[in-house]
Length: 253
Ligand code: ADP
Image 1: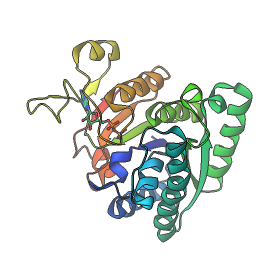
Image 2: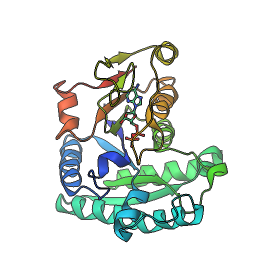
Image 3: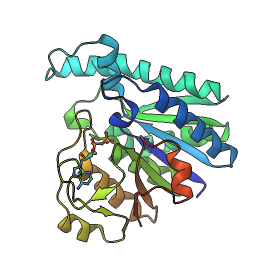
């Protein structure tokens, strides 16, 4: 696959204490560098604005207050992009930021602009990093989670592959964090069947979608023939390990 969309979840970007994880950024960047050197084109969809906002302020007040949450995203988005910019610079890679809301992706006129911007960035060798514009979007106008956003971007760009990097290495028949005997589902060709057979546990503390939105994303892209991999972003060199089949993951076809 040449055109790859990689989505990074909040729990992957951060360490156990809710700080952005420098080691992850360094390792992830070198993986992207290797891929671009191989001639692959990459778009990144990254969560983590809120968690970066929290760690920047070093406190978590009025958790349920919408304005406060949106303010945290405004602060955190800058921190997040600063981490990306600095680590990509070490590899001589340039990044460009695109923040979108649901309206941007449901209006055909606007999607054309987004697509043209993406193609232009990629033609120029710049890596687009996309996130939902959480500081301006309220629930009613939200895509809601970056799994679905990444799927929409993969479809828009006509990607060859979507990779979701989470804190979990695949879909299990039940939440592996709560059940030691959970069994990973390695190749999934029938999503409706999968939905009937697995149980959906709760997501991590900073995760928004959990496993449900990852399956929705798989549904969105596989109907257009784009395969999706769910893998653990915490594992070092995960992407090349996936290519070499050294690491387990869930593959949706
Ligand atoms: P991210 O931040 O990467 O988007 P989330 O925290 O939103 O990740 O979702 C991943 C979490 O979903 C896992 O850490 C896991 O605890 C939980 N989960 C619940 N049910 C399942 C299941 N059946 N298989 C795999 N993970 C599950």
